[in-house]
Structure formats: C-alpha cells, structure tokens
Length: 459
Image 1 (tube, one colour):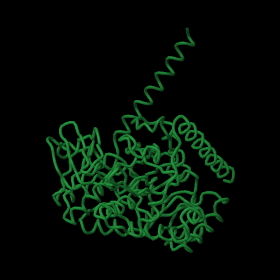
Image 2 (cartoon, rainbow, N blue to C red):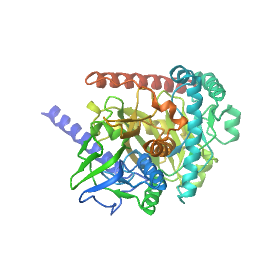
Image 3 (cartoon, rainbow, N blue to C red):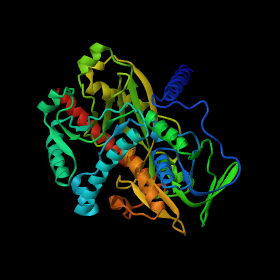
Image 4 (cartoon, rainbow, N blue to C red):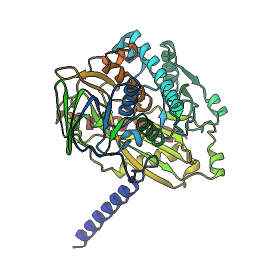
C-alpha cells in the first residue's frame, strides 16, 4: 500500500508539473491573443486570389498582390501571427543550415551562389518593408553570429566560413580575441558573423504586417478555418460559414500544410521551444557584456540560439526538437525540453545561474528533407501555389518568398527562386517516419550531449 501511495504521489507531481508548464506556455512574450481579432467570413465571395495563413508568407503575399492591383483575401484559423510567425526567437538572418559543400552537391555552384544571394536579398527586403510600412519591431541590425562552443568546432567553423565566402555569402570569421573585443561572453569561442540582419520583436513585426494589410484594404478573415479545398478553375474553398471561389489559391500554412491534406510527404512539423529570463539588473547586464546585441547560435548539431530582448532579458531557443506521430500538431509541451534549454542557457551564461526564467513557450516549424524552402504550384490547373518549409529560418525567407509568390501568381518568374523549385525528396510514410524521426533526433541529441560533456570536462 505504501508503494502504491508513493506511486500515486509521484504521478500527481508529474501532472502538477505539466499543468504548471502549460500555464507558463500561455504567456508568449512576443504576441498576446487579441481581444478582438479580425472579421469572420460569413457568406460567399468571388475573388482573384485566396490565401490561407496570416503569417509572414501570407500577409507578404497579400500586400504584394494588392500593390499590383489584385484582389486577395486572407484566411486564418486563429489570429494573425498565431503560428510560428508570432512566437519565434526573432532572428532576422541570412543563415542556412546546410554546409557549403552539401549545397554545391545538391544545387550546383550556381545554385548555391543564388541561394546565398537570395538570403541577402531576403533580409534587405524585410528591412525595406519595415521602413516602408512604418513597422517598429525593435530591430537591432548588428548581424547574427554562429559561434563555436568547443575547440573541436573551431577549425570546421573557420573552414565553413571561407567556403561560404567563396560562394558569395556576406560572412566573416571572428577569432576568440575579436569576440572578446565585441564583448561576447567567453562561452562562445569564435564565430561566423552573418553581417546582414539582426534581431527583432516577431510579434510587433507580424502585427505590423497585419495592420499594413488592413490599411491596404486587404480583407483578412480571422477565426475562419478552411474545411475543404476543391481544385478547379476557379478553386473552391469552403469554410464553416461561407464559400470562396478564386482564380488562384496560395498555401501560406507552413507546418500546418499537411493538416490541409497538402504536401504531407514534403514537410514534417517539429516542435521547438524557447525560454526567456526576467529582465537583467544593470549589474547582471554588465557581467554578461554582449553590448552590440547580435543574435547568437551555437555550432551544435541542433543549435542553441540566444538574443537580448528589448526589455533587457535573454531569450534562448531550439536545442531540443521533437516530432509527433503522423505529423500531429498537439499543443502540449514536454517539460524536459524546457529543462534542457534552461540548463544550456545557464551553461553559456554562468553569471545568470540564479536569474529566474520568466517565460516558456513553444511552436511548430516545418522541415523539408534538405532544410531548404519549397516554392511551387500544384493542382490539375496549376493554380494552387505554395511557399513552405523554412526549417527555422522563416522571418526573412518567408517575407521575401511571399513577394515571390505574388509574382508567381501573376505569371512572373524570378531567378532568385531557382534553389526552391528543385524536385525535393519525400519523407517516408508512417510508421517509418515516426521511427526514423525519433531515432535520428535522439542520435543528434546524444551528439550534442557529448559535445557538452567535452566542454564541461575541459573547464
């Protein structure tokens, strides 16, 4: 009996912990759910272009189409920015995950050069949009740093920086001495500085795009779930209280695309998490240094990311990702994810060992088999367009590809999109997908844990 009571008590504590985490999760620091969000579609419409998804891709597409005089409407099942657009870490970056050699193998040298040029242009376009549309997103334009945290990574990072520079990427290698001159904490040994970009408030940015779309007379229907898509010319889109017919349909739904029955073999959604400290005291900020406030990510296989927040705290992201059976998008989070990320934050910033964590939250990002976005069209009439699969680099890429989608709908092709129009490999079907994803992610976590053990033993 005593053993049974002890077991029940243990289960109760686990439940309490999960409920506590769920409560904390509801406080995304960037974007609160609006008290009144948009208009619900009621009745039938006939439009030029229908767009599903009111994130970076969808709103950017709508703005570009409207500027060209095309009538576009946007549907969002929740509210603008409710997905990854409103709850990411806020790194506006030219970063791509793939090594330069892998990009040359898959895309050719010309394709790799085009990709790096696209990344630069995507950041520049996003910066112009913020200026043109009057969006104040607390943008700090000091670049983003990919930093080594173990001696075994130093030479590889320097070699990769040189390889990317040879392909036209605007990156620079910074030695340990140069990082210390910039005030970067000692846990980060050397780095590759991605010169364009910086960090911003993703909530302010997505709300700015939303408000700009409304000012441009784009109709944005929030709380309007698409229940059925019928291919045709025109496309027929059904919602609970109305039907829309459109000459073209744009899927700007990223990780949510498979739930619409589209691109289910091309994308897998992965759950990522973030944490944020309380605002630091002046003494704590001085102890940290890092006065230029660049974004930082580590050279782990599954990177950690860090940035200052406008309120003077530090936000940490990624490090642990997980896949759910059959690409399900559950809203639950694993407290172990947060624990690993918090441990990593305190390991990189030991001066913050006792600084409280104020926020914990998570969201879904969409990964392709090669971690590059997909741009294209489908359907028997070729009038269902998509840009998806940003693999954690979506602020700049999604914003710019929204404009590229608008061109594609109008029949205009842009050479910069060439890397995203490749024939992508498909993810396997279940249960192979779940088994494979679970095994691979576990192996990657073990590799990163091994790196951390080496760091600890060298200190």
